[in-house]
View 1 (cartoon, one colour):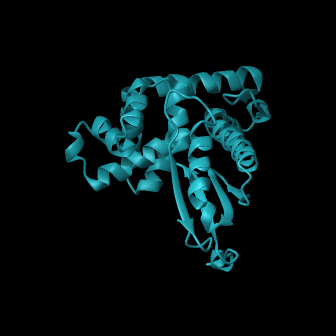
View 2: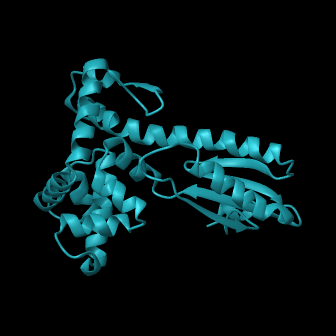
Length: 241
């Protein structure tokens, strides 16, 4: 509700653009998983497509519950979620959760290989890198505590994906800022929230701003999976959904 307090100047609007499922798109690209890459580039509902493969049902027969569970697994693998964590998330037994994870990795072996490789790199070097070479040190690999070593593994799996997403939004910010200046627009880049950029400017510039956001954010990086952007306009931060 606090967002309702943030409103635009008269005759101005907020234009917000956020990446659609950027971490999953990056995971597909970095792992080279052809099934995920093709599903994204064909514009399929990625969670429904995953449910169809993992649960071995036709795409058009996937139930809302199966899609919800596939979505949890899709995001869970990025963060190294255990069967225990997934079982609590979905309110199912640990055995059932483990089966979901096993079935996912059997279907997406390239993802499994990528995550295992990231953990091995972390164990050997005590650090991992994003796609663009930014380093994250993970000293927890040297800990005598089991929980901290498990945390290190999750960080090693997640950092190349989430860290790369963070790099991409920063690259996009620079491109958007430069484009606004090059076009001589009054609109200003005022906020970045995770994978979203928000611009405030005159209503007369909204169409130009939308094009800049779309072009610059989609071209911020070149992956095997195309980047997708959702753009919205509103008079308050609250309504910018």
